Length: 557
Image (cartoon, rainbow, N blue to C red; front, side, top):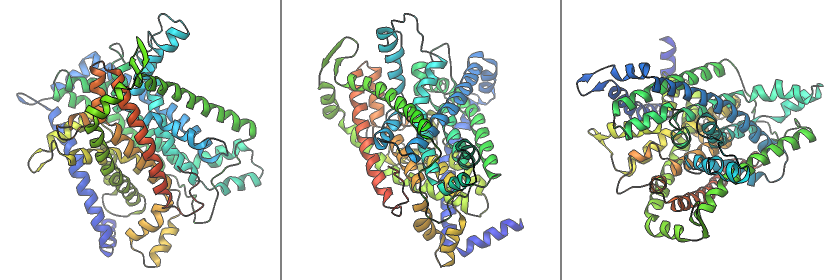
């Protein structure tokens, strides 16, 4: 209690910071906790009142229990593989002197700037029973891509770029003089990596694994295409129960079960990081390049990066060919009729998507960095609750977030259903956790003395955040902005419940076209979406680069 009193007195001395803390708490309660509480309450209800029947069905029914185990197995595999691959990409493209950095950077991000089910469709077209590689090139008659290996392959290519974006900022922020000091003391390259670089990047690794683990658990687009009936997964079952069987309480109960491993992973990661110190940015100039890699090792790792980029190019070449093909699978005559359809009949969805993304992205980016700053640097009651609440909305399937918003904001006191506001708010509070995790990982590497010096000179907490902290965390800020924008452009699971006649999305149009068998139109929408996002990433990189003092940016964009 005494400590709480001291913290409250400190807050009272900085009224602006106090107001921001209060506003963030109110926003998290209203737009994160309240919708999920509505889903939780619904999971305990049926036509007769309160009940535990839905949870009993999950425990007793083999289908649902197998779905939980399958989801955990896939999430662990994808989490580890994505972090390893993301770390490799971030190190080679972020700290090594190699050619073609920017093209490879854009290629590495292609899977997250397209709708989540496009990668799965590409995998199916390449490795399915009639796949281009398995059937046409290798002449395999019974190769089965459905199930565990298909979902894992698709999710690794979908979520490894998320780990890459999270780890890139962390690795660029590591002071290379620490490695130089170890070299000067006679350490080998392997010893320097294991004892200096890797331990300093552990916050980013843990944060990236957390994000990928939760994303894999919550993903239903890839499993919906590739899991098949023999390999049920929990998020897919929740989606099918809600949209197929119209059993909202059971779908809500399945989603609540998903919270258990997600929250457990978050708690373990937070406990582990809280016991270590990772200050590497001290205010002294440093370079972002590294001497860790010898020539042979460097070019071997670079070859792996090129191989990854080539695999992505093949995946998306399938989509590009489909956009300019008259009828996929039978008539490959080049045509522009699919793009004509997009610009004539589907352009309203393009405009709506851009408006929603342009509104939600800056709010998500700034709010994410602000919450990261509060959690790492602030001292106020309920800080742990703020950190937990800020990521809670990210730990459940998007379908349940969408249902929660419909349940929460379809009546008094706040009616938002069918409006622009409900889509913007859903995207902001669902996709800002990536920026928060990246920001927290980088802030833990920054010596607090830098910010203390600014406050000693009379700067307020808000001025310190805006003029000192934000430029230093520019790589993480860029990661948060990019992720928020591309997810706002490519969201489907939550958004499909929130669109209306006034506000529609390109991804909903793509899913509708796939369902109608118009794969060419769906591919054309996807190509246009990817082009828009690639241009936006370059613009975001230029804007964030202006926040960073010259010479410290390290080729972020």
